[in-house]
Image (cartoon, rainbow, N blue to C red; front, side, top):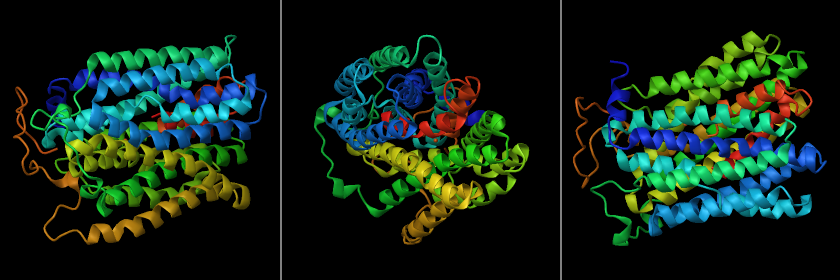
Length: 458
């Protein structure tokens, strides 16, 4: 019974192939941040602050570009955007490895803007391929496979960049990986509209005022706050373990944190009715605040990360599912692009916020700072939840019935119909573990924090 929602979802046409291709396509994207950091520090002989500026430039470009690429998908279809972004990002990595630092900064903005939209395309296609009764387990699978990509990507990036080949070869390898990812997605050509929805060729236009409403903005705010808490947590884990002389355990602690998230995401995909995103995120933020109390013992820190960690993937899953239900098909690409931007901005803000608290108050306060900001965001968006019309579901993921005008949900062969994750902990755990195994390359703290800018490429 526990696996039934997943069996039914994977029986849907094109879902397995989409998940496989998307998982592989995300691997080079997940490796980008740590490779770029090592290139700036090693090849260009600059500090980690300078590397952070390049990462911030890529983040700004990615945050601006994701909704633009999504809108192009809504207007022109998927394949033209895949060609544009694949060619642009391959050129970016081929050129970036040869640029001086002063030229790399503006080019990183452009590279982020034209990044391959593998993350948002997968989510948009899942919304098109799945009936509402199976959308929650589908997004849970997407979240869990994203964790796997972030486990593999940074580890492979560090492995190549710290070998005799060096960071420049790693950047050329990324160019090849992005090319393969773009070609794979182009060949698969996953649908961005359901069969009962108007195709892109129909020229349907949806005005922003029809969907860019307080409820949608509230979901974006919670999504941004969620990744802020996640990225701030991984910086704080490294800082608190370093203070207690247990830095060598950071890779294991972060790997366990990623495992907790995977378990939570798997469990959330089996529930019969979706849980409101605020009901997932608010406890995650609150439970993050006291995690620093376990800093004296790595195993206690890992234990304290369990409750908040198990809510990571479910929170991101709930945000994707909610947006897929709120937004009309003609604007789904732009909305998913904005969702991706919210994820990216949250990651970019979390590390500096935690770092500020760590520098001024101590490592334990890094957890408290990002957790408190998360609680504050939850309180701010709470009125948007309370003002929802009487009788409405607490979250779009609660609704099992199709929306008005939608075609009936397809029947999964051999299965009865049952009601129906970002940057992730895996990103920092993989980077930290890889860096720990390469002591002459990059400290775990840097590998963890450098994971943040990489989501600009998503």
